[in-house]
Image (cartoon, rainbow, N blue to C red):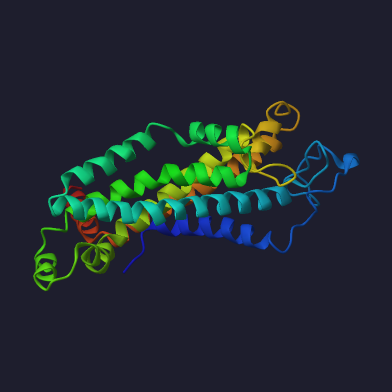
Amino acid sequence: MKLPLNFIIGAILTTIFLCMALLSLVWTPYDVTALEIADKFQAPNIDHWFGTDHFGRDVFSMIMIGARNAVMVSLVAVGIGMLFGVPLGLYAAAARMNGGNLIDEILMRGNDLIFAFPSLLMAIMITAVFGPGAINAIIAIGIFNIPVFARMTRGGALGLWSREYIMAARVCGKGSMRISFEHILPNIANILIVQATIQFSIAIIAEASLSYVGLGTQPPDPSLGRMLNEAQTMIFFAPWLAFVPGGAIVTMVLGLNLMGDGLRDILDPKLRQRKAREMEASNAAS
């Protein structure tokens, strides 16, 4: 099967940043905690590919560690969303199909309540109690992801409960949750994987936003959002300090979105067939 171009481009961009994040665990070109005031505000050059900041720190090294922090926060936050959201969605769908409409309504209205508080506002409330930091950012973004996966899982599961093989499993005496995990979850895994890549990109933006307002990753660890915040007063004489972290965020999110869109094409045969028919019709018309 020929892979879609958007998936290939997205996978390449995502792999580059994941490799940078992993490499930063063991090596960076320069120590980002060392201040070299004599080298401050150097434009991109052969020694400092992305220049230096107002403390003389290497921007490329900071981007590597900032990408690592963004990936770590986003990965754990999306994992929290899936860990709690998927079972909740499966349980809500099973309850509705077995006459437990009240349970389903309570769970979905609870999801709506969480949706009413955006991740940034939720992080502000959490940090007001526990203080700013990456852990609290993870909790805030993770909580926001739970209703997303719960609704996605519930919607996919409800469409499968009327299938013949599910009825056969019920006739065999299998319980609702056993059917949900053994028969329904594997058949909706494709849409959950695609949604996870999309939520990953949203979580990266959320982490950068929280760091921008001082609620995310704290100094001395570099953060892409905080780098943007610090660069806004220096953009006219050191524009690379804003363009580099901003470009990194855009590239990471673009890569994940392209990869998610490509995965949807690969994992959804109906969508792939429809696009093929549309392309054939377009070619025939021309």
